[in-house]
Image (cartoon, rainbow, N blue to C red; front, side, top):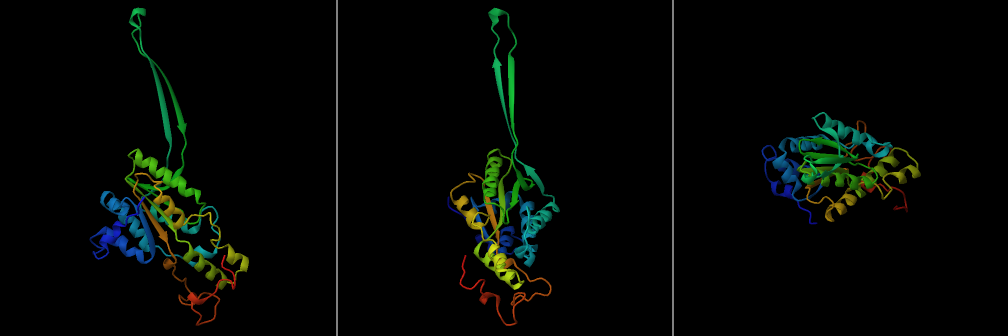
Length: 267
């Protein structure tokens, strides 16, 4: 499936008056991908939700702790993003299916039968959760989870769209190489061991934009317009006491861009 870039048509417009222009401005810090002109569809059909998405992204900052501390089942970053959406009225949803089968046994008049006899059976399939739903938009945050979560999320969007319950969906994730390299530099600057440095975003089975884009281009979302927003290293802002040009623990004058992660190791 061909990816679109509907936000690009609004790059020169005034963000105060054109919602798509506000999203286009965010490409300075985020990477965007979409199918079926998802950004334009959401801006037109769900203007309130689209505006709230842009507001959350505009206020978002990637902290050093997001990159060098273990996150558990749900990282602090994902918790922070979900809390921002919940504060704006978004709520967790769950996709369930119910299949109801009805057998109608018709009456036979010569036998004096008049009534239709029905036998019914229902099968309930408990589905999976969607992180955030508001109006006719579904949104998940997959910062560094198992990449199988992407199949679950996209499958839910497709089902909800096919059932006419949503008009589009948004998936928040991260870029890979630049975030991994930044995390490793920050980890080393914080005095962590070589093994801890290696562990930062080292696995190839976690969620990131590359994993998501391949699913988008093969059409996994079906007819559902899907907007992917990836947090990049450009979202990182030094915490108090950190120098934006010098990573913690390094001598002054050593630019972050020149710091080796592990000499002779590129894994």
